[in-house]
Amino acid sequence: MVVNPAFAAKTVPEFIANAKANPGKINMATVGPGSPSQLFGVLFKSMAGVDLVTVNYRGIGPALLDLISGRVEVIFTSIASTIEYIRSGKLRPLAVTTAQRIDLLPDVPSIGEFVSGYESAGWVGLTAPANTPPEIVAILNKQVNAALADPTFKAKMIDLGEAPFANTTAGFGGFIAEYTDKWAKVIRAANIKPE
Image 1 (tube, rainbow, N blue to C red):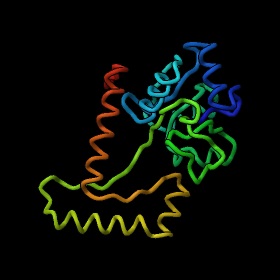
Image 2 (image 1 turned 90 degrees about the vertical axis):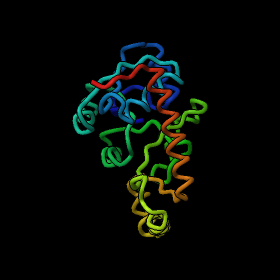
Image 3 (image 1 turned 180 degrees about the vertical axis):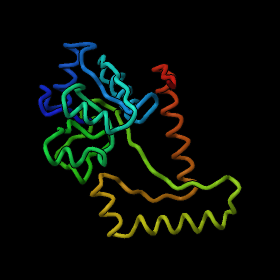
């Protein structure tokens, strides 16, 4: 959750108070309908009880340009896409969307510290067609988990704002099912439709 440095709110509670005092007047950039940035923002709006105006963009570049210039006030997006703007002072993080603080920004709280139960995190995983032989899946899983355990690789991922996690094939399948169910409910509740 990042804002333009000129935005008045310096913390999530201040942001929520500002949004409640100005319903429908704070613009939330997203990278399009159904995108993680929109879903993470919609979940925040619902759980925090605030009315933000959704402004959809066709990609993160234009959204960040408008956030930096002050045309929109907030975006919920990946650390990887904003970290250099944060480091240079062009954007200010209010919080991370993950359940816990992250190593890359240890002084930045999680939204869940202020909005009980809030958690949103994107992920990247390796999948294979359903008919892939189990022995091939096992080899892939072993190699991916070995890469994720490599200290150099892991440090690079953390430096990019990612939180690598290894899993079993069954565990990863369960994770995908839970993730899909959670966001399907958010999409239905917000009546999000493709453009």
